[in-house]
View 1 (spheres, one colour):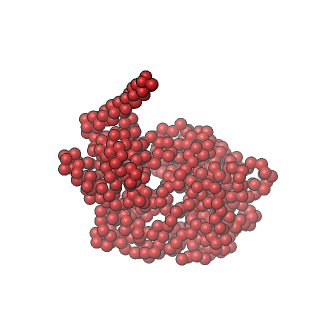
View 2 (cartoon, rainbow, N blue to C red):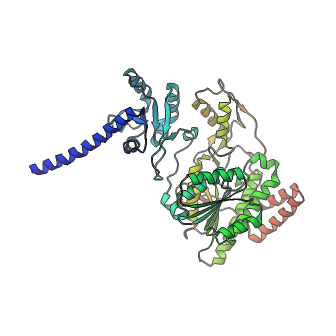
View 3 (spheres, helix red, strand yellow):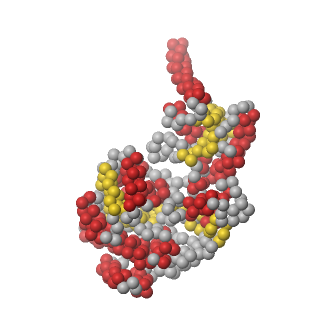
Length: 519
């Protein structure tokens, strides 16, 4: 018995001694290498992830002096020899206490749990700004990434918690595959390229109309260190022969179609360009993907396609219908055998994308204002680019399972809509200013093609649960392919004659609900 106790004591002593040695070494290096005295914000489990990263050397230049946790159960604990000093509301007292002891804290690191509503992340950030502290964040590590710190972006504080993504499922979708992304230089397209490369695609062809955008995305992908063979080609999806030839040469397994004209006011003015790109360009991509033998084509759509009131929504809804009809025909012809899938994925506004309100508001605040909002009651759905693209890939995995071959339009769960004026005011406050005092908020009026409230499902397409977190399905009306081809021929003729009234009449015939819900 004595031997057993001595053995347990020796093993425990070695283990705790080693851990203490590593921790003291971290503290010593932190002091000698000029690391910042840092306060960690978040629950014990998140703090432990970061502390392990510091011990291993994955995160450098930090000297952790304490943790503030939103969980009462964490108070009084010691996490890897770093004490939990209190709750998040204690941040100012802790900062003053350490400054009074000659150990000023220069930095805060917010872990994922610090962004939960009960942690009041906005208040933490405002206090940090007032105290002159540098603030970083530890992103979620669910994707298996190496721990790394990033700057806190305003959009981190504007969203509900992201959906949990099954990354193994996404890897199964693209690993070893040949993938094409149209519009690969845009906000959504470039993120899809990055995710496809991350999850192990063998070959990636980026199709982009803009030379600077194509150069930027291919350079970024090369710096990413992926094993995928990456090729970028300049092409306009309106050029049917060019798209057909590129896909025939590349022989893709999966095509992600992100190329589109997307800005509502611009398309209300240059309406025919929207028809050429969003309708005929999408038809070209779908037909080329089919001719090249692709397994799936995934079209990026929009919540504005539901009971559309704009040319953007109208042209996207028509493109959805073409993909639906082609998908239906291929399923019918396959007689139960595996066939190419064509799906559309709808979602709302993406934070920090080109032309979105967040970068616009940031620029206006930095310029001293005013911040311009169209209407005091306007609301929109928002999500991050990363979450949107991961859910797009997830929708594709569902479409390629035999469970629901009848689903071809997917809708991402956008959470609760956000009032735009409240977003603007919040961003002003997060900049340390007061709306209406330091920076004015000016209402400019609604523009053509806009409505106050976006909707996720039309009245005749109730949501359909598919058993995948963050994604639902819609069952909109599905005109047959011969009818769609008749409309396409009429549109082509009207565009050649620059006949806007005929184009609107054809589109109204195709999408009768157009303009029915302008509010």
